[in-house]
Amino acid sequence: MQSIITIITFNSKKSMRRLILPAALLLAVCVMFLEASGWGWNTHRFINRTVVYHLPNRMMLFIQDSSFFAAHAHDADVRVDYGDTSLYAERPRHFMDIDDYPNFHNLTRSLDTLIMQYGWERVKANGTNPWATVWNYDSLVAQLSRGDWNQAKLTASDLGHYVGDAHQPLHNTRNYNGQYTNNYGIHSRYESTMLSPTYYLSHLTLTPDTTYYIADRINYIFDYIIHTNSYVDTVLQADTYAKIVSGWNGSGTAPASYYNALWLKTRGITLEQVQRATESLASLWYSAWIDAGLISTTGVLPAVATVPSEFSLSQNYPNPFNPSTTISYRLPVGGTVSLKVYSADGKEVAVLVNENQSAGEHTVQFTASGSLASGVYFYRLRLGNFSQTKKFVLMK
Ligand SMILES: [Zn+2]
Image (cartoon, rainbow, N blue to C red; front, side):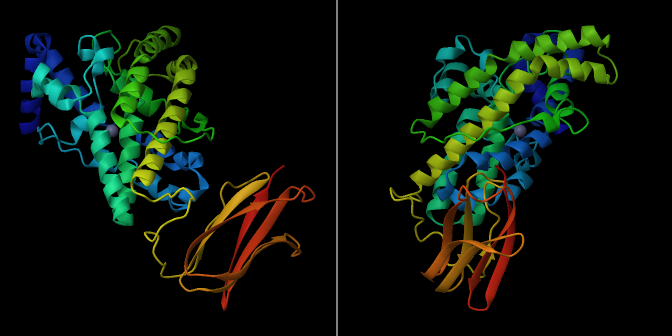
């Protein structure tokens, strides 16, 4: 109850309309609870899991942990404490109702200046996503540079969440639940139900692309937020269209015909925004690695990648592959290492490593020769008594 009262208080200061109508107040409270959810959890997991496909191979220590990033994709939502009403609370970090500010294309990028211009209550009510993303980025750089690998991976997961949220159009508008345009409830219909396993989650796609070093983070983040905001009307109009074609009047549960029509009209921007979210995240992770000094100009991992405690041979990436793929492994001790590729009937088809190597993380690239046919192959790592084999698929 405490939190509800507080939310009503600051909303009433933000907008007289909400103060006048008790029903609107209740609605605003419900919407506040909704808004922190971001994309549905499924989409957050998709973004955090597939982002690694953009990363350069020298970020193998991240690439091989995609399931970890997916598992922690919504930790940030779980942390939301509705009783915490401070400017730096978790809840406002998930959105930026940027169009609540006049002339928002030229909005100051400085949080301090914005607070001076509009007051901290309005700034907090409108969300702190761009700055929260930068704070999170700075933490990631600090953790990577001191070699705090476990914490860095959790922070990177959170970064995926904030970047993901900022690419959902309804996270970048004061009309975040369609409450001002007769589209009430669109927020969760669009991001959660439409993108659930029942409907269109499996239609999300990712195309691997290049990562870039982002020197000016805050402007980069504002750019993608303003771009994302340009799709708000598309989502709202799609909702209106879907209601008309399905004959659904907005009360109770929307039928499948509603979601089919909603997807038809938002598919293009949704796929684009999820793709953009993964690209933005990949570039921010990559930039954090560079800022942490993890990638030298020669692409060699520094001492942070400490000596592992046991052998491990990772699944190659990408897999299936054509014609090249990368294999990484960790050695707790040095010695004569062999890494060979075999065909399904046990014939040796390539020698990738056969030399003395030191303890640590190693990666090697395998490019299938033109004479190798599509099919299942195996790669085997040996050092002393240790041997491990994994399967991979060449698909031409
Ligand atoms: Zn969120």
